[in-house]
Image (cartoon, rainbow, N blue to C red; front, side, top):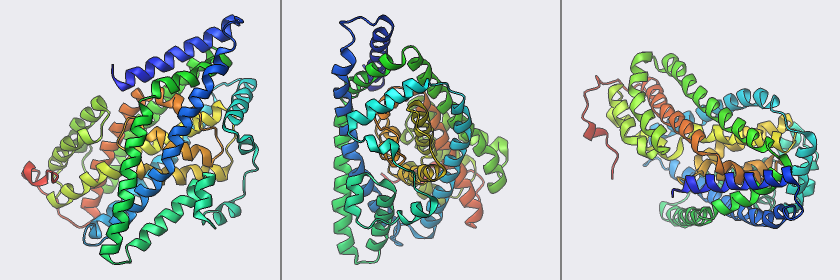
Length: 427
């Protein structure tokens, strides 16, 4: 049985058991949610345990490597700038679409209060959900951490990201031998965290089951309806952004719509079916050849994009946080929405290439805006269908971004007859 199917079985079984408790109110079933819920909280804590070292190490390594002129050069700098701009646009697009639609999702206030209270009791952070939201000026000041280690201990992700970027840039200014030693250690930490996350995810079916039981018991049949609404919403937003990329590419890259759509279609099909951006890379390289993009650009940009450029992951974080905020009855102030967009933008570059990677990285984003992180495990269980649409958005963004760089980078387009061997990624 596949990982996805096992997680879905755990989610459905947990919801059904919880709904059974809610509907029957049988005395012998009532203690069950309280018995299994601690197991789910342990699973969430295990995920959270790995995220900060994974994100920090990956981000420092990425910045330090990107700053190496011998490796990245002018094209790398332009690529990174395009990545940031495109992901910010994706985050704003997701928030603008999801926020009004989620406002129509009815969650009983009493149920939301119970969910919030239980999450606070389980995590021991009841104050988080009632903490006064800082103003814009305080938010800006807090971006620079007085003590990065304290920021890590407090789960203050955005200041920690600022420190990580600054540290990575500082590494580019020291000797290559010393920089290489630090980067090698941090890369080892990041790789080890990916393995650790993989081990934690082997218990995902049990963790999701343990969290779904109390959710179903509190919300009753409305729990299933809320999750279906989330699946439909995230799929529509990701699919809508994919369509939005077409006119953007036509306008900024001056590529005929029909030609761009024909070049994207094979990579989109592979990505949709496999839920793997990397699996769609060969088809993306062929799509670049059909668009007549220079070999030198395609061979560099597309493998880099496959590693770092995930507009779908950024969309998933924004929509997921907004959904869980609605589910738990947490109101996000403007400063928190800015924090959400900023952190989702940066953490999208650190999404690991593992099942539900975008959802796992969501944990510190939730913590930063004071939304209970326990909902992460629930979203993992319903990630299959949205992941298909997110992957399709990713590969469309790659080819759109490559087309824009080909125009503004001053590199002439080919006629589409370049050898596919010339643009194949090394290794």
